Length: 342
Image 1: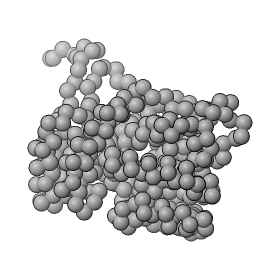
Image 2 (image 1 turned 30 degrees about the horizontal axis):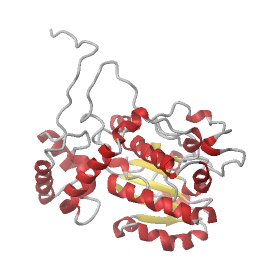
Image 3 (image 1 turned 90 degrees about the vertical axis):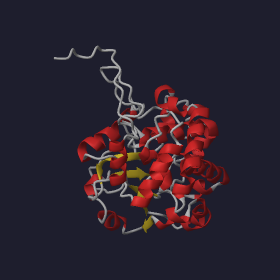
Image 4 (image 1 turned 45 degrees about the vertical axis):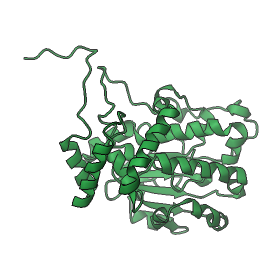
């Protein structure tokens, strides 16, 4: 009988580009023989990149992002890795501590339960975010760092492990519910729209994701004014995935998910919760006038205490740079319809 591993042992994970993993990606993403061959070519071309995100599922996020994705994936993927290294993005989940005011006023999360296909539901309440209030209290760099940290939490974390345990497969498709209730002139000011455009560039360039549909609900009349400008920020492929639902939003949502999976801020009788490791406060709202620069004077919501984005520490020292976190990296382009996306 082999001796047990010591507490400090290092476990080397399976190569994410192994034949087994490659075949799994082909099946999960339902690739054609031609697409499989192109993916294998990309495997060879990207062999020099030693990074945890060099994984077929991540690469396929770029391949499927546009009609010519397989042709542009290598350059886009290399640019993403260079951006991560230059900005030390890999360190965020370990070193960044979110400001309580920004965290509590970012009603953005994956939900605990899934849509009717068994895929994750991502809820973002853009109309409930006081973006103008945040921009008055924090620099753009501070808010951008938080936004990128949140992308990291969404792309890998305890919720992904829970999803794979419950569903027996990696994340490959996402239903986005984007709530515009509360959208007003504050969201359409130049400073807010400029912030949105900057974040959109980062999201689409560095966090491509498998969004299968985006259900935009409770859009007020003023949205039509903003949409005339905002829609140009999105590709034609993104616009084709959008479903608009106003007064009948619950009937539309029920076509794709159990309404009980939704929190009460969306469905008054809903009992839905956010996924493990996700922020719990989804109300949003205007920031009180007494709250100062950097959130001075703000009393944090206890529901979000302890939210760090990091996974629980394992008992042994385990190297997982290409282990369980890889399959979910493609789940990261989560604010394709974000007005605030903090």
